[in-house]
Image 1 (cartoon, rainbow, N blue to C red):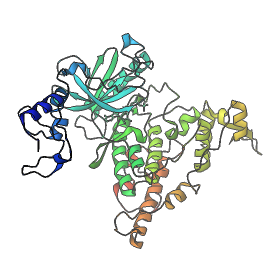
Image 2: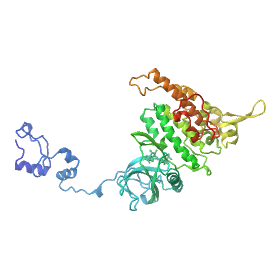
Image 3: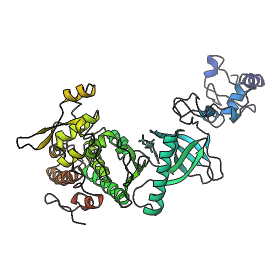
Image 4: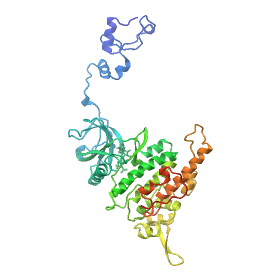
Length: 464
Ligand SMILES: Nc1ncnc2c1ncn2[C@@H]1O[C@H](COP(=O)(O)OP(=O)(O)OP(=O)(O)O)[C@@H](O)[C@H]1O
């Protein structure tokens, strides 16, 4: 059998591969060698695994002696879409996003250079990428803001607010607020360097096949969110965009969370924007065009905790009209003062005089609203069989969290229903249409659902 003779070696060296000549080559041998195995110039058999991984450059060289490897010739994997250069000397795409490549750098100054590793997320303000600080080796998340003045200025506000929250309100990092490590400008893009976090709560709900989380886990998340919102309220800051996508797990191994995205946040004295909050989580006062306070975040929190429990958004409005309709259908009309004060009230409501001559409001019909606004409003999908919040929560399937059987025991069912009674009362306090009566974070933290005390009936806030 021709295996290691000099002529065979020569053939192998020039072709790079040991050829199987004929059937005889495959016969067992006193010194068996696997068919098709390659050898190096000294006649040693090469491990295919090593050759295709750590020794890949050698392998290419054996195949083609002219092959030369230089890292500068590596194709750069682009992370930004679209990737065609348009603005900023070719560094930005048509959306004014910086075109990011794996293994490129952000920042130039010693100690502030970040190697780009992967993409983490995309938002209105720009892209968020996983990077490594080459001095400290710390892996971080960097938000690369779009190269447009409006995004730049608003993101500078995010820096100011996070610096205030991190340094003055939560210096020991105890209140579930994202940490900002660094910020700098890279080729006209503001870059915000954050601690690296894990999945967001929408991804968690999705991973759970939209079946909802246990009351216990919802309580753990709600308590942390109330803690963060207490700090914000004390600083008179409003987040303005609280939603499951902006709440991130610190890691996949524990239910610790952090609130992120302070890009829409503002001070209670500077509530200049009226088009705020993501629609599903938008409060009645914002929909109606009323003045607003930190209470809008508590409304969003109410929507979020119900969504965490049910696995589906409570008010998945397809338009502003559909959003307010869903809220009114479930919770009733907002108080008269809000309707009278609202700059948007007459978009959605008609006023009329009742039999005593008092001014009253009613929601416009879908046909009337569509006609007046030249839209084709649709009623929107109904996700739940029941119409009231207590019915929806009480009729959600009970998952046997603790027992190993596929059905919950009667003891488990009783315990779960007691938890749900407390949870419903908690949610109703957050989803109060009247922001003046809606619980503050400090008040809500005293609710039995959070404290773990036994719930004995509708909870009354303690005067503060
Ligand atoms: N610190 C972080 N660690 C890991 N992932 C992050 C981090 N910050 C942001 N992300 C990811 O990037 C996404 C976008 O981030 P962020 O919400 O801050 O951007 P944005 O442009 O302000 O978005 P939006 O459109 O909601 O205003 C998040 O939903 C999250 O998935």
